[in-house]
Length: 463
Image 1 (cartoon, helix red, strand yellow):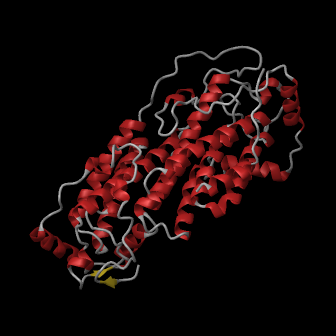
Image 2: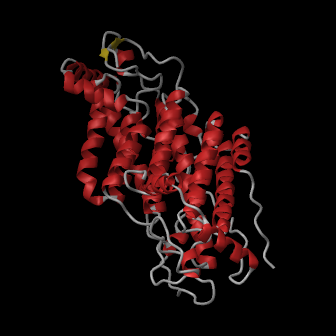
Image 3: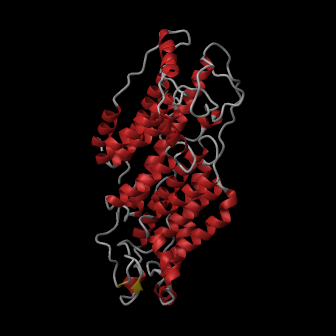
């Protein structure tokens, strides 16, 4: 006897989660208030702690005086092109810049299955841990910014009120560029050049010493190496066989079956939130669901929404790019982008939920191996191609619900809008003819539980 999952109203889910929740300047830093001075003690994802990679002391006063001459020299060479580079790398947070770069890189180099989802999770975890480590070193050494050493230095940005060493923009550049290059090795040279440009822009802006940027790049790359070692390997290779029988998926190459064994950051096991079994193939419930898919009256509106969610990310399906874009906008709107570690925390929480949702959804798919609607009834037509893996649960429903629960925790006033995303993306898969109602409901259930697990972790991360 199968226990049906209870469908919880989406708005209630998200609202409950929410409730649980440059101009040239001179002299001292212009930003008001110290920037999260305790961030070096925040809980990390992969590093043992922020102090695991604590940097040695910065150069002494004599070396600093020599470096200051380099900063002054670059400040005197600012032309329109240099100021544009400074402006670009200073805009919003370092995490924002590198999420934009990963979006563009991913759009130009699509990769199958969950690999793109993992790329965003890896990069944002690396950014988070690298910036926590940076804040540990910043406040361990408390090096003054160039403009604090020389009150007459003209700076091209509002310099954050945090110690200078290491440079946070360089830390982020080293971490993010290394992770993206791991995923897209053909882009490595371009990414390395961008990281160097980001670091140089902070010296030219008068916000950092050369040794701050050098140490920052090295620290970021060291963190990236640990994240790649922890999350970036292929994992176990599936050695099973596709089962045969009534109501089971038919195919020879189930995409993503290996990804069930990817390294997890929150889930205790891939099956932690595995739902109850789907309707039996000969049950009245399955017959009713099959009729719902077959008899659904498509309209230009429903077809347009199917296409939007399938192709709306520069031709790619899902919400991966949208998640990064949304986090960036909301952080800026709330004025939180000025804290590099706090911004990185938000990106990491959202993308970890997305990534863990993928693992949990794939686990259930390859546990039940349920046939797609058009495998039950070949006369069913679809709006988009049927994905090459089992139907139950819906990846789409899981992958939109998990991060939107976290988004609702971070930005509670936006919860109703995130509810709209979750409802429409999930429903669109039924409208497309590629999923049953129980697929969508179970996907929402998994995603909600994954999102809640990430939120619970966030509440205990010390931020």
